[in-house]
Structures are given as structure tokens and as C-alpha cells.
Length: 166
Image (tube, rainbow, N blue to C red; front, side):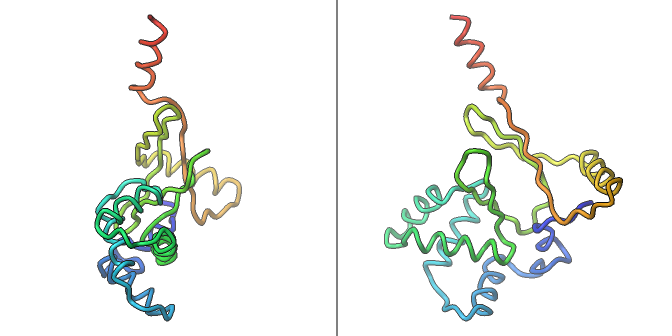
């Protein structure tokens, strides 16, 4: 299987033996930053939401708990979470950056609906094997990859069909 940045938090990888907030605390300490209750709140909110979260969605969730948390604090915390391998920033075509938790999650790819924006995660070992085979055949050593497939989900296709029938 091709290793991705997310693999660093898999069992046996960097940070796998510790909880995400402990990994973040260690990273903050290494960088010489002070512990912050607001940073912890942002991280806790991010991990409790799960999925593919935009900064705006995260700011809303954090401010429901503490309206004093600034947008800058959310951005800085997400950058720290990404730096220590706990979050993966994703820039889906034509959209704002979204973050997904990385800790303990296996590699996966994405189906993105161009109608409603739904994001579906999937994993397929045959695709992974084929990608590795293609890379090898070209003498290429893959360091990371992402696969994003864009199209219309079943719900959007049904809506389009129902709208054109009337």
C-alpha cells in the first residue's frame, strides 16, 4: 500500500500511541508555544464533528461553546493539527479548504457530488494496487496521493430527472 501523511498516526506510526490532544500538546510544547484552553476547545470541537469540516463550520461550533474564540485561533489551531499529522487539509475542486481528522484513520479516497457537495469516502484495495503498479512501471516512487472523483450523487440525479419530467 502507498503510504500517505495520514499513515503517520496509524498504529505503529508517529503519534499512534497517544491521544490526539496529547499529540497536539506535545507539538505545541516542541514549538515553544503556551498551552491554550481555546486551542484545546478548537481541537476538541474538530474531532467531535468529524467528517470534512470547513473553517466556517468549525468557527460556528467553537463559538457555540465560547463566543470569544477568534477566527485566527481556529486557523492557527488547524494549521498546528495539520503540522503534527492529526488533520488533513483537503482542497476539493472549486471549494474552500476542508479538514478531516487523520488520527487512526486508514487511507481513503473521495467521491464529491458537484450538485450538493456531498463527500463520500471510500477505500478500494484494487485501486491502491493498480496505482502502485502504474507508479512502479514508470520507475516512480509515490510519497503520497489522493483520488477524488467528481460527479452527481444519486439524489441529485433523481432531482434533475424529476425536474426535467415536469
